[in-house]
Image (cartoon, rainbow, N blue to C red; front, side, top):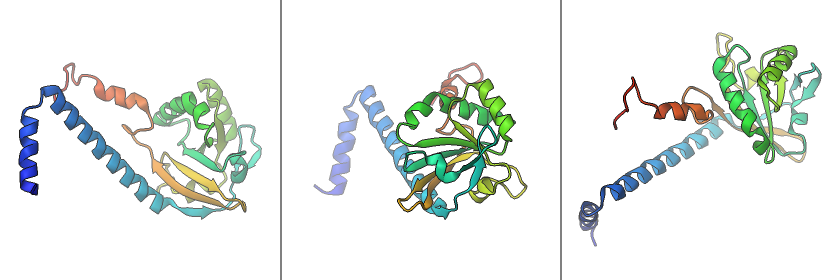
Length: 204
């Protein structure tokens, strides 16, 4: 069967489908497109982010020095959330969400949040929010800047880096991402997208 004949046959078949069947096909196509796009984005981010990194020294909530290598615990991989600090309401929203799933994340990989706030500020704010995950201060370290989360004007970007610790102790950043309103790292925005716009249901 030629390509033209196949296309014609598919059109005839679609013409006999119910509205629900057509919806399911269209919805599945869009889902697959999103998955393919996401995969391409991850590959692009990994290519741009991969780099060997030094064993940076940060500080825990008590102000004690902690090496990046120590943040792995007994895991080979480490997810570090680059949080802009207490002053960023969006970053607080993200972190509130991570607090609910960090237990499950930490079963698979080490997980920590790093911000430029001082340790005492982190300690007080994390207690106020009820955050149980590990939290470290990048104050006085080049870690946040070297990872690419400080702008030319000295402000901060939110996002995440993933690190791998090799058997010889060498640490490699394998990928990274950036956070922003509407992204996949905060479920609240996806619920907001479903709400009626201007008091009326949004039509497709």
